[in-house]
Length: 185
Image (cartoon, rainbow, N blue to C red; front, side, top):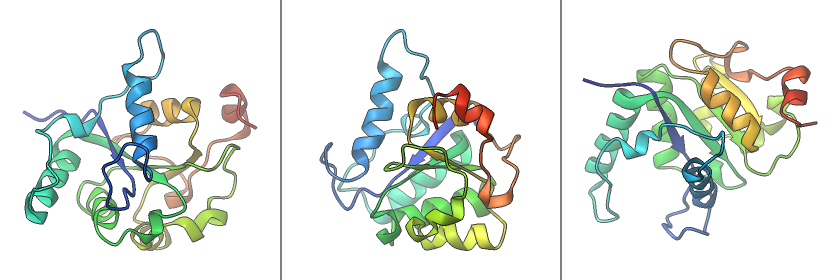
């Protein structure tokens, strides 16, 4: 039996598995927040629902395992967007297309270099991978755009799922009151 209660996290690793390289550091920060005792940040990590992948795994094995995590265990996807995410031509485009086209799950688009409220997601379109841009433009993606801040991540991960998608098509945003409640200007 499958339980689609997890959050699938996608990021551009730039071909590295070194913890301080690339956007993998933000993924590791999220995992550290989750592991910290007495913290309100908790989530179910879809990547921990299946056996670990190895750097020596074949592309087909990797693709199948990522698809399984999205299909069977994920209620939403958290897409970490940094300055190099748009350059990923391999895994991030696959993850976005599979999440939207096959699994029909919403994408929480978190901008790692943004500290303030996102009021106009289109202003960040130059950072979007082509797979995301295409699905936002053709209105098949359900997205909410947020800064990479603990409070906004908590709120979005808890709120959005395949049964509850953000309004605004691919350009969903939170209102000013919500950002104020999170202490974000």
